[in-house]
Image 1 (cartoon, rainbow, N blue to C red):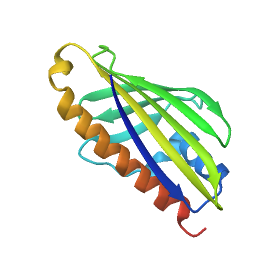
Image 2: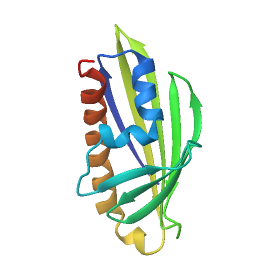
Image 3: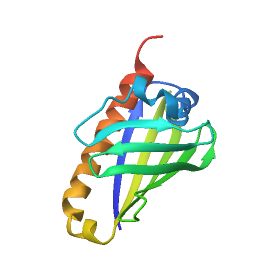
Length: 141
């Protein structure tokens, strides 16, 4: 398992940041596609979703939340070859929201040989996601 941690300060209240992260069907409005990330399709409002990525579809779910403070997601390839847990922790700091994103990536089988590349891709995608979240939350209403 490899851990990727990113921190960013956002000039918006924790509730607004939380809502952006929690509203899975809103991701297309602020998280553009990239070489790695091809979109999120939310299911029926239950917290289930499917991410389309360069390694294929990853089925995911919201696994825990503490409104305005934290969200936890888990996603995996159906084969089990790639497994990821993502946690967002939010805290009000000096009139801003500090967001800490911790991703844990586990690879198995054929994906194990690709782990160094997958970790670099996941780290770059984590940073890109945080920048996009900041831009979205700070844009004028």
